[in-house]
Image: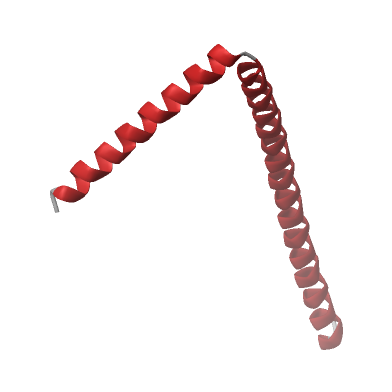
Length: 89
């Protein structure tokens, strides 16, 4: 076999391997993006359900007041936690 054909054959096989590698990487990227899209869809549905629940809570004044009390208690506990944490330094 002439040297030119041998060189061309090796180069051809090297290019085939490179393109096969690129194809595999592209397929992996597509699978990853499809997975991320599914996760984002799930998160969007979950957030939509949460917003819907909050809207129902804010419809009734008693539930609205209870939510404010809970938020105030959480805020006070958070402030106390930080005061204790930073006073020990």
